[in-house]
Length: 489
Image (cartoon, rainbow, N blue to C red; front, side, top):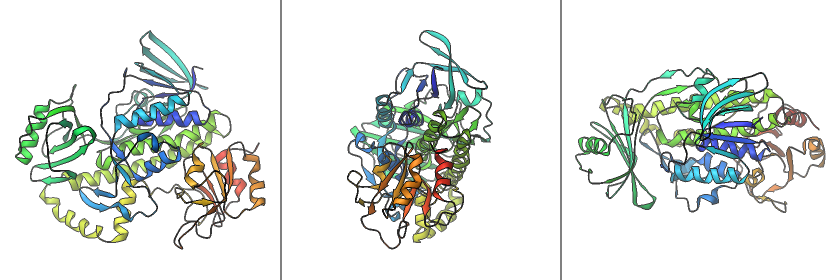
């Protein structure tokens, strides 16, 4: 084998997955068609859940000073994300180029093998491996791996070569995105709906301004190269009346509202993650964030299977958990597109939803949906409110090294958090100590409404989701440990 896992694509999903696999002790090769990172800003910022994920792995400090905000929107309608108690605020202005740099340095520091300037030509599944034909600087060669993961974007070569179905709807409109210098415009952070379309303006670091322009009635084009800046400036002037042709374009792109999702995320030894598995209107910056979360859900599971610590059936939970998340993502971005990009005929609907958002429960619902904090995986059996949900970050006492629950997830291992110093409970978990850390500590302070109130112990998966809790889980602890971490040693 050339590597246990070959990851195709060195974007945020591919780099996150490579790092997760290395934390699991798996040899990984990342194959990337481009010879160097593009440096393009593309996806901006992180949702609250992605902020938590980076915090889980100790990555937040690598981004330096991050500007955060609790101001968000749903389809251009303002939503107060500050209603989500105990959550990180979202990061607003981190360009995708910075995200890719941080994740690549992290993954390579852990030992990932990154092969840039290597293009995948074909993918062929075998009974015990996958063969990947790759064209690189030295010519064409065939590499073998136990598994191949396509993180190679919406036009995924891996998805097409492996025969995945990718149903959905084609683009009906075209939008422009541009980062420019040399202009001063009033910020329109959540966008502005105009008679002819929609525009958005946001400041970026280094004196750069991000523009998004959507002119209604503009049919999608199959472009071989990015649109000219003059085309973007002309559309802006038609919509706003302002002439910005004198601005200096840093980067210009076009995108559409195509919506598609793979019917399955795994076919035997070939797996899809990120945009290779789902494409949609980039509303609220959810695409990159969902892709990163795909990688974190998959990484520890694939690592456990490759290392022989868990059965192959564990990989079935990747599709079972992430496909519904992707389906819901497509639903909410389509809804936002209708609100944001339609004409005056949709104004009554905008007005009604704006009224509903004033209710706290509705505001929390929209904020949790867009931020990724609403996710609840189907963890069999039990009434505990945390089952299948992310473990909240709480301050802990009584442990020499761990001060916050989120810090316990830094090694990307399972965590049994014993909140009542229960020696019998810990003895039952000892046979899994090579995969699960046993931590005894107490919450420093909990409100009466905290989902941890009255909880004596929680079993947290490496991705930060609760797999078992006491009291409230139907099955006992060893059953949960075996289900998620394989047979005892």
